[in-house]
Length: 193
Image 1 (spheres, one colour):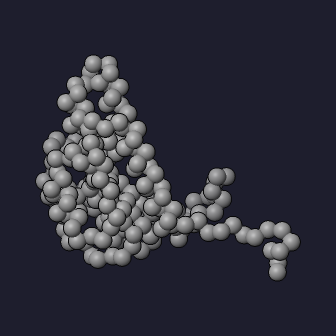
Image 2 (cartoon, one colour):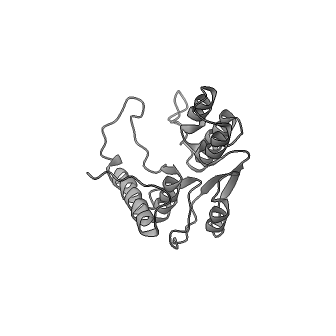
Image 3 (spheres, one colour):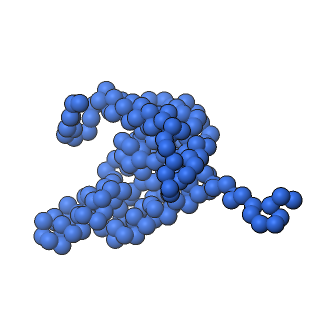
C-alpha cells in the first residue's frame, strides 16, 4: 500500500489516476455484491437497483462509473468536475448538486454543459458542505478555532443543517424515483388468484 497526500489541485495525470482507481474500486465491489452472504436487514440483494454517488473527485468517479458500467442505473454527482476526458453518452438518470460559493463554479458549469441531468444549486453554501465539515466547521468556529471567513470558504454562510437536508432529501427522492423498490409479494387469501 502506498499513501499519497495531495497538496493543491492534482495535475491532469494524477487526477486521471485518482478517477480510474475509484471507478475500478466501484466495479470491484459490484463484481462481488452477488456473492455476499445475506444480512438480516437485507436478506436478498437486488442487483438491478444500483445507484452510485460521490462528492468532488468521488462525484467525478460516480459519473464515470455510471457511464462505464451498465449495472449502475442512476448516479448523483456532488460537485465533481466532468471535464477529465470525453465520456461516452449515456441515458441513465443523473442528478448533479453544486454550491453557490465554490471557486470552481465556472469550470463545473462548463464541464456539466453536455450532460442531461437534473441540477440543484445550494445557495450560500460552499464545496465542503457535502462532507462532515458541514457540522464540524461551525463547532470549530463556535470554539474560536475557525474564523467566519474560513467557515464561509469551507462550507458557506448558510445553516449547514438546511444544506445537508436538501442534499439528503434530494438524493433520497432521486434514487427512490429512479431505483424504485418492487412491490412486496401479495399475501393473504387473494395471493393465489
